[in-house]
Length: 133
Image (spheres, rainbow, N blue to C red):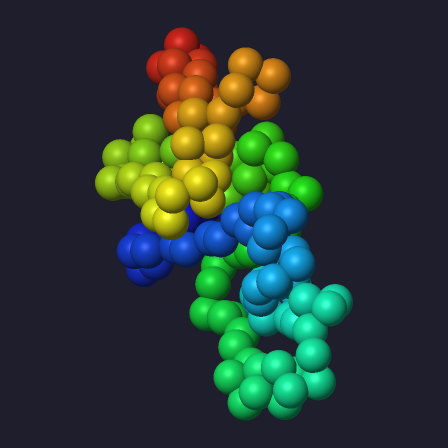
C-alpha cells in the first residue's frame, strides 16, 4: 500500500488497554472493523444505560484502527512503513502521536528494546533503503 499523492493526511488510532480504575467506572471502547464504538462497562446501571444510549458515539472516518492487542510491529508494518517508504521516494511525511497523558504515545513512537516503536523501525528501514540504492 503506497500513499496516494491525492491523500495528504491519513489517520490511525491505537486503543490502549483499559486500566483497572477505567474498566470499573468509565466508558470503554471497542474496535469494529475500522470504526471505534463506545460501549458500556459491565457494571453500568440501567439509568446510565439509558443516558449513555442518548450519547452513544462512534468514530468511523479513520483510515485504520488498531485494538489494544496490536503490536508495535503490526502498526508499523500495516500503517507506517508504506508512509516511511514514500518519504524515501520524495514525498513529505510525518508521524504524529497525539493523546492524553499515559495514553501510550511514547510506547507507540519509541517502544522498548523487545518491541521497538515507529521511530526506530522507520530509521532502520530508511537506512536499509539508502544501502539498497
